[in-house]
Length: 361
Image 1 (cartoon, rainbow, N blue to C red):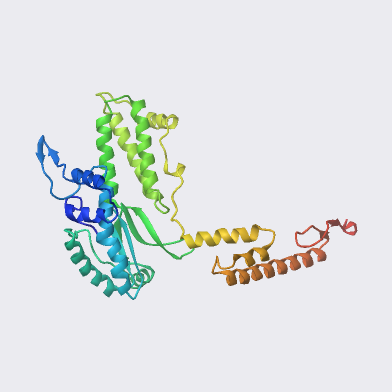
Image 2 (cartoon, helix red, strand yellow):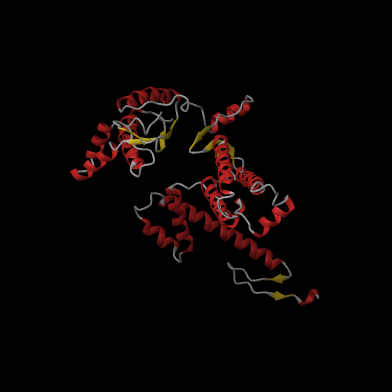
């Protein structure tokens, strides 16, 4: 989902009402009102603004998030969720958001209610960038069964698609969207064309490295390495092109340019650790608690002290018994194998000493 011309259509009166619910200081409210009505300058001509927030302004992202909090987030949490029978989740960043529903009927009903809600706040849904698709494990399995491709969607510069992990399980795949990739390459081409003769090569070469680092750190998600590598190679080709067009004389051939990069390397994707999808908070807490259990001296005492803090006390007891039995059985089997052999070796679970059988020599 996307809002059409969001920053240009924010209602000032509605926005001030939202701010007054959390801000009491009249001086601060007056300053924000002046910021909203400051107007814009286009080609030396001043235009007054009665709606919208100035794009590029310092407060615009903050005010937009406050406006959307009351227009969408709070409404979804208090009025939409209690009426649903299936799972639903809202993910939003500025004016771009994705809403996940378990049932298709509830998704279509939400689309109608959302357009009505946005109309109350003077906003309109962009029909070109908004659509309802089927997405998930079951949908992907059904599509492959009938020889169809799974649908994808773009969000925050990434194309989200159905993928498989190395063990064959379903996972959400992310890669750089084609639109953003072409946009970044066009911007890099324009920047290299403008900068090539403004300053010396050794000056803007460092800036080029920082631009590559910024791209890797945003798009460096697990599973997106191929497009990061492709971006690096395309930037190297563009750099070779514009370095050789600083004058009528060619500066480098490919062999010389690759040697120059060897001694003045640009950041590569493999040098940057890729970001991994964060685990849920519950899984992180469970793993940390399990780590404490198996590294502590008294396992039973630690599990007994968990009390009401962790609702998985019974599961931890069962897991502890299973691990204890597993190690006991493996220890007994190791001892029996060692005793039947000609060489005795020390074992952490048994008091077995290494002894050499002289009869075998």
